[in-house]
Length: 136
Image 1: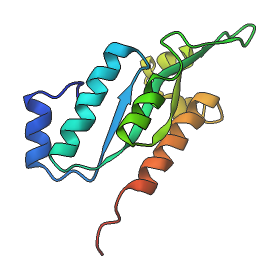
Image 2 (image 1 turned 30 degrees about the vertical axis):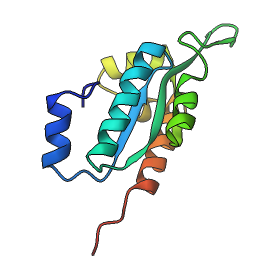
Image 3 (image 1 turned 30 degrees about the horizontal axis):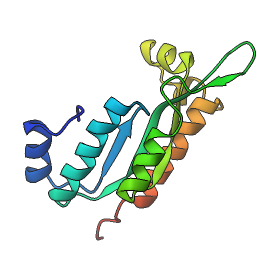
Image 4 (image 1 turned 120 degrees about the horizontal axis):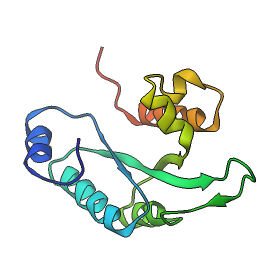
């Protein structure tokens, strides 16, 4: 869903059975405010929050491999502690993610052995692990 806690989010969460919500945020203060509101809204409507994902967590220079936390380092981690939630993983800020998505071949398909693809796959496995198993 789009960020925030507006009518769309509230209506969907009240009228459609949802097994769990995942909150995704960059580590910036302004984004974290929306993430907090989203987590609190889901809790109010009794939708389990499976965890948080830190998007654009780190940029690695392709030439020298130096890592820079452009949007801050630990904002989502701090929020997770405050809300008593787990971190499901970090998605790096990487040009290959944008390029592969723009080309119609997401990084998990076009470059499955890349660090970016591994980050997505790790998060997907965490989400699947936390979802309730439907009755047979």
